[in-house]
Image 1 (cartoon, rainbow, N blue to C red):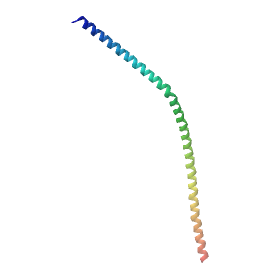
Image 2 (cartoon, helix red, strand yellow):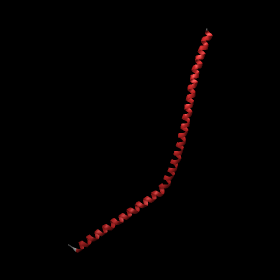
Image 3 (cartoon, rainbow, N blue to C red):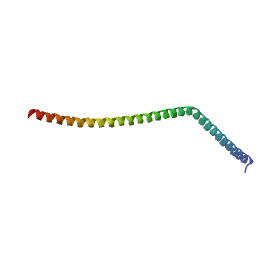
Length: 104
């Protein structure tokens, strides 16, 4: 084989290895830069959203407590309504009885 061809082949192999190494380093630098940038931009946003989420969860808990209290009130009022309906029926019966007595 021609010594020039061998030298050229070896030079190309070394150049390819260097190019691959440089591309790998560039990819690592690009990845790390993007990761640090994203972390610096989105970390405050995430913290703010987590605080808002915690506030909303507290508000939800308060609203659930209000719902429980209102349901208790509604049950009490339903009981009063039932009692008043029974009294109305009794009073209507008394009125009918009195009307019968008056007619007799």
